[in-house]
Image (cartoon, rainbow, N blue to C red; front, side, top):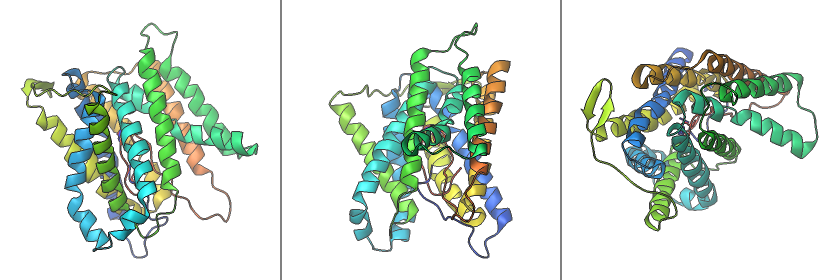
Length: 343
């Protein structure tokens, strides 16, 4: 997600003792809703001339600055943990920030936000198929059922034979965002040592922002910005920094921290289920803000995809410790325990 944006890199694996389930649920829902604002607020910028790489670079860099204070507080002077985790931070910046977010933003530049997010939401299914191919061990029944449902749903959402054909390159971008999101899942399961999750998020965002600035400066990817007013919420002359500010403060900094705190109280599995709200909210917000009304076939396909993800997440080996499974989204960045990203 949202790089589609986008999620927290690691989370507390189980609810903290004494944590409040009610406050955790509120935080997790708020995080999912906040992540869902990414696509609808970024798309007007893309239509106004921003390139996906430039939009991600500004979003990531500004969010890293916003998260600087909580990062310094979490580190408490233990800056050596950043050096010891440089490989994880670099991979996070390249995959979760640059890959997932740029491809998600590129996808929503060519596809409706809801369609791009639903395609990206197939990332858990890609992991299932990868594990099946690598181990040659058949997944549990619930996982197989979930994969089949999501594949059927993906076919409905793309609907290549429909009257309103979708942009082929946009579909490719959305699938690449799903692949990067699957890579993010693998990074989320990696040991973090003594590196606080918020430090991984902020440093990964900073790495991604700097990396995009460099490759944009040397011309490897289009890197354009526009300071012209954009149409938003019924007005044709909203300053560009208004939607970007919403993305930075709401869909990135707040969403990551709220997801981190919510998962700490609910546990990662419950928090990841709550994160499914992001898809529904993003579709609703895109409908209200951008006039992107899904077809009935895409709505059916979306229901199949979400049902498939639920089946996959319901499956857990007996007596196994609960793994953290972050929630997809666009291409966005990640933070601990959040329900993607778009983004």
